[in-house]
Length: 247
Image (tube, rainbow, N blue to C red; front, side, top):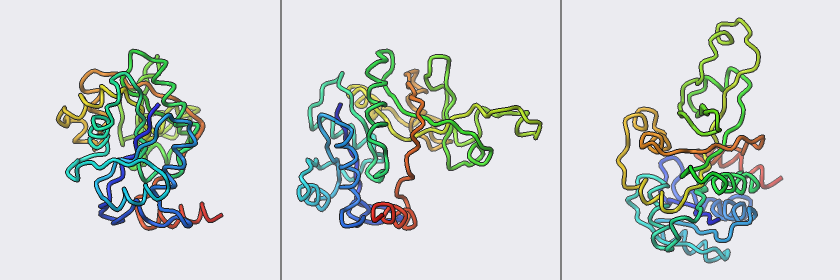
């Protein structure tokens, strides 16, 4: 298993986010430390800025420079795979550079899930939803699974819609799942994925993983009880993570 951490320097809400101080270490180092604990054979930081490369060198990480024009972390991942000459059948985990609270055990489990499903090109994770507020929150991405545990669809909407429960008629446990944005890929597939244009459902939902399903490929989903802490998107998120590591 290889882990590649896309780390774009520019950020609308947090410029220079990878180098933001988190209890004495840059954010990107906190993510790197998390990746190393998963037992990966190789952990690489893929960035578009020399300052991030210099910081990575300072704490002993390997970083590769990638284009500043990439639209997504997956596009950056594809370029890094080419530069590193990773074999087509090898498994690569995309760990976002603003996810310092991703459980290392979960990273390993998602990679192992893909390794055990030869019919899938991608693996990801989900967590059971048990409350109405989470189910109806558009900032929480939901996933519906088929009988074999593969993704049927991802949405910001409440799916599946528990009609009886939402009508206040009870209906028992909500059988819905929160998607966790952690992905393992077969390296060769990432190259193909990056060459495809965005598909209509992806553009509507703003969910890149729908492009995989649009093209008829399978995403196997690992159900976990480990719910990661939220990533760092805003100054408020950064303060929360700083507090966590300070304690």
